[in-house]
Length: 400
Image (cartoon, rainbow, N blue to C red; front, top):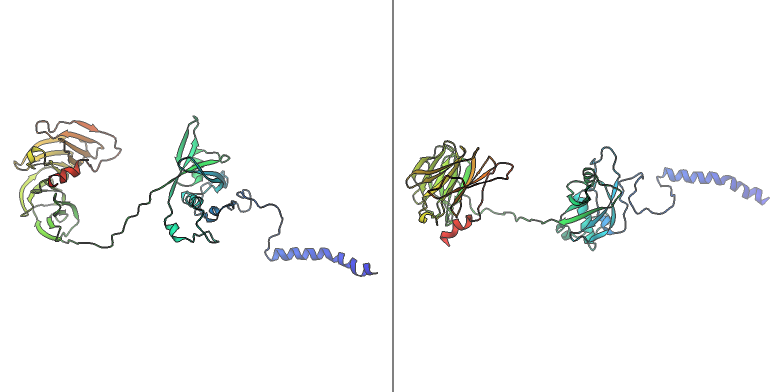
């Protein structure tokens, strides 16, 4: 009687109770537990393939994906992850093998390497660094992948974008461990200019060229307003305003002894000045097109007379002038395009650089000036400027 009255009705209601509990869990949004072992790798083939599966260090806790939304594999031929081993420049391994998303870029891997090298730095539950000083001192890294060539040789390829691009361009197998060597990059910190020491107004158009005197006490400027202006550096005041030019003043140059100053304009006119009085000494129609560069003969040459200057022009010529006799002593014609820069070396050679991608070397001796010594090739585009190792000593030597 007890069994038929109480026990039997309970077993009849038991399936309905279990069905009601399951429906309640589904409606409440709670996942249905299926049991099993927690997976430690990437969830390849799961409903969430972008899930980062590694959990064993704090490094993975800091790792954040910043490349969401990119589509490095539009055809869907690449897996969602790749096994990576980080090495330092000495070849030592850092950490264990890591399963990284295929879309990881250098910033992502840099954060991960930083966390592997500095596991003592704390982070919060969201993966954010709690030490502000450590985040500001974080070192950027560049990464190189070790790739096996078809001829059996190994090569290191820099990772410039994402791992997916690297795998696709270099045809790397995603079934092998990809070895990445990280190199720290130098961090250049430029101190901001917080104040302006002096302002020297005067030109009504753009200032196109400025140059200091050899002793550093005076400054000269040429501008689009066709004027040349001399300034006192110590007082930041204008000393002279010179108006002999008829077009934009493109180049300026002080003689090594500081007693002469040369300026040239867009019409190919060369004018020398007396810096003490601001008066023009000579005016020469030096070139048919505008003058692009000028350089005085070093002071230790020609007995320290400082009376020869070389000019370069858009007409493809370079000329040596004697400002005392107002005579052109040599014409160097070998470039096929505009000569952009000219330098007078300290060992008796003149160097010219042109838009024709060549650098030509000429003798500066009066007897051989204009004869080509050699041509330097190698640039794939125009040569805009030149610098010689003797520039500093030629400029400051007479004042040591």
